[in-house]
Image (cartoon, rainbow, N blue to C red; front, side, top):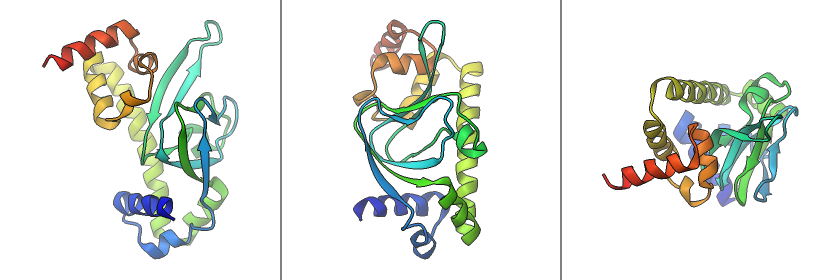
Length: 195
């Protein structure tokens, strides 16, 4: 029940959801533990679940079919909602992988149940809008970061959003997310520590 309290508190904080509205969802949330590297959603599958991370980190990435290089696009950490958002919102096959970076624990809900909740209350509709707006915001922040910010500024943004990420995510994944090579990330970290 403590896990549900964490989720309820987060939903109260982000969309002002009250106890009665939250309680409508209690039969629908399931708990799942993920091993390191386990897929939340695989390439070309439709994402049918929205997860809430109790602990751990997930990443969305795409694999280059020619080189097998992985390009990290997003990280999701503790007390964040996780989904392959484009697929989840459109209910079309996903062009990415979503996987756990380390041992992780989430609460998740199926989209059909979420849609029932959207019909049941304005607070749940507000939550649905929050999920869509948050996905759009992440997309725009990443796009603007690559267009207008230096790698060092993108690194600082990543630290601000995911302060504990260095405890669990390998540097090569972080470098890929920032669009740089691991040695460049090491130099950036060294410069910033010296400040």
